[in-house]
Image (cartoon, rainbow, N blue to C red):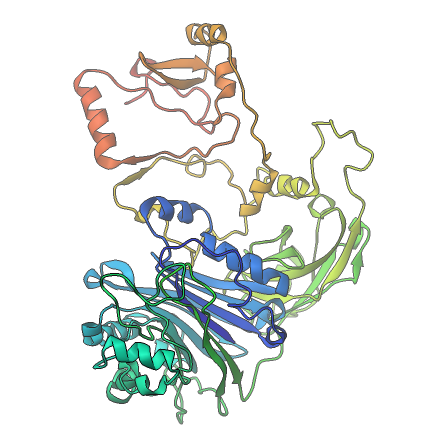
Length: 607
């Protein structure tokens, strides 16, 4: 297991992080999981809104870099600028179960998330492991505050289930982040002398965290490797020089990685479950900083651990059987077998992934893992094998490539079964067609997207997510914003996955409308049933959607989401002023509004 912590100081991601993740060494082949904790990711309001709608740039970077090495994003959690990402090799995914996340704010008395902790807990081969990424209060004199905040995080974070409800209840805990512990007593001149002379051991005994490990009960049992690398804070950005500003901050080991093994206990745990059998051992193979990264005033720190479990679960919840190659559509048959006791849901699905996929929702196509025969079989408890589904020809990718099948469990929000890579060799649908034929599909990705966007299709993308399962808070959490009804609220079908955007053209054409046609379109309103609001200097005017101007509106072309963000005071104040003047503003009609929607009180609508 590789663990990385980095306070990025609101910087943009660097171009290359292979050395940070130790991807350019032979160690990568032996690494099974990677946990990455970031602090101070840019979380200004405009950046945060964008990240709420799309994946943040740091997460995208790590997924792009790790996916060629067969690492898949298992889970992620974000609290403002604090992010935790957990990756695993794809063939371990069925053995990573009971995945949950949590976060605790400690900034401004618990109301602000610039400080605090985020965690991902999961069962690894039957053993409970928790990753905890923290950003604790800064400054030398805030040691007691750091102690209190850490105790608050341990107390507040509770998980569902009958085992390992608290962080310290897990068999193994990795605690890392910008813990902000400083070097006491010694002045800055001596600290820099010790660093330049490479006598770092003279600074260890004055390190606040080393002192706290022997005096604070809350830190009892936590272990850390030797600090054989220079202090990682504070540097001038873009250099390897310690702080040369007027403040001249004393160098310190603020960025740390610790671990704790649960003390073996006898008897039964709460809920009647026996503790993990045998002895769990952890060896730290590497603990170092990376001086080559200069985008922040902190240097990233990485550690590699060898974790040995006394026993492990070696049978996945779902076993999937598939042919070695699909060369004809009728070969796209998937048979699967469920383990006894597996909690099946009617929302489970089987995804088809390209080798090198990035996360469980990064599928090419999917099919629901349910059938009438299978339902009756499970209800009667007569069998748990022999279930089968089939991919339609339209859902299959065209061309040659390596693919993997994965069974996604909606109950556990994780992949419960995967196959080995197999070949798909199907003729391309555009062979022999004219390149200018607009009626046909433009690419193989578009074919699968059109199938997913069928009017009656329902997405396996999570509509019912567990607490803290989303990558970033929903827009509704931003106070002072009004969310206008979206297409989902109006009963329209939604895209089943982020992949549906690949069907949109990359270049949006520019549409020029003659001024004469604009005037004619604005004046010819009789006999029309649907209108589009157009804002001009003279006030809102209604234009028929049959006119070139209406067709030129990007919302009618489906190029922009039907979503408006307004400040509450601004929106209510503007409306109240118009009502006082006896004027009701025209309602802005989105492309998803039903025909016949009126825009003024004269047409019988309420304001």
